[in-house]
Length: 462
Image 1 (cartoon, rainbow, N blue to C red):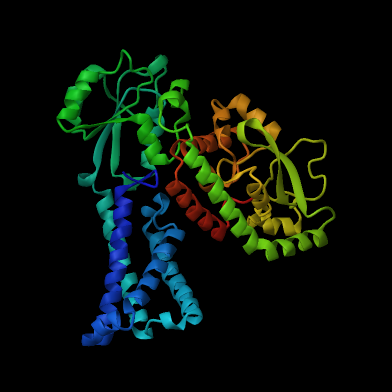
Image 2 (cartoon, rainbow, N blue to C red):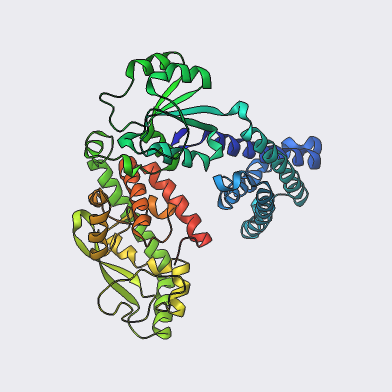
């Protein structure tokens, strides 16, 4: 795992992206040589050919990201990968054509462009098939076992199994089940006293410590000896965070908040959060003002009632503020005072409301909340007081997410869609706590990048 923007990325996935960018660049260079011959250097240097070829390369890599070609779910689906590669190449042609129409000076000659698309598509398809085979090879897998038997022993192997690009195979755990409750997954390799023999027998490369109480039960000297012999010893909760991008709620305790890094937001970070939110909200209002006027008119023409919906939400340290949104439901949709989350095919949603919710345009008035300081641009999602109280009673450590101002988008919002149940919001809390702990400029930039993808693809709306 490689850490970028305070988030861990699988090394194999970064290698895949880097090699594919290289293959696309080589395909473009080969097409230039095939078309221009000995004049290729002149075309690249004096005719700004390097810049002209860089644009399709950048567009292609962005399209591959937006078509989920670096997503764990698609990595092992060869047929779907080929289909999406064809979609990527088609999208690159359309986007490049629009770019060349708007900026004729950036236009690449038609011959090299077509040749590079064909050659690049062929190289990418071959490389993906080869990468798929290499990624599945047992010779290249890291052999892993867990030391201990808390809830991580069940959750961590399940998360690893979803992500073949990690290059791990979890063989099992060592130690007796805690609290006398046997866990179904995975198989027990032996007791803690058998650590040395199990490592040798199973040829383990890594040991992940998953003990709740380490004061008396952790075989510290044995682990130190194994580490000196080249076996990597890792903390289970940290590995879970690195793999999933969220904290493991079942492993949390008050001392974790007290002694772990993060959860103490510095004054420079607070200043950055306010200034960046201010700049983004002003820029957003300037760009979206004409569209917001049109949406307001459409809402008034479509149904009775005001265009702007106002609702009390919980902000920093439990303080209430009035959230602004475009009204997407009929008036008095929550008669009786009980706020009900939106459902699939909800009859309360108006015709215009259905469209603006799908495109997330109903969220635009929140820019005024950000401007006046109720919210940051990026942060946890704000809830109504009754939902906040309900979640705080049922979800441990839920109140910790209120340590920073809520946001219009955030780490939890880009990873989880519309949440209704307590279980959904518990998982969202796991992402929120990860964000609060690792909050940084780089992480905010990554969230903005992923938010654009979600808005363009219309995901997670209801």
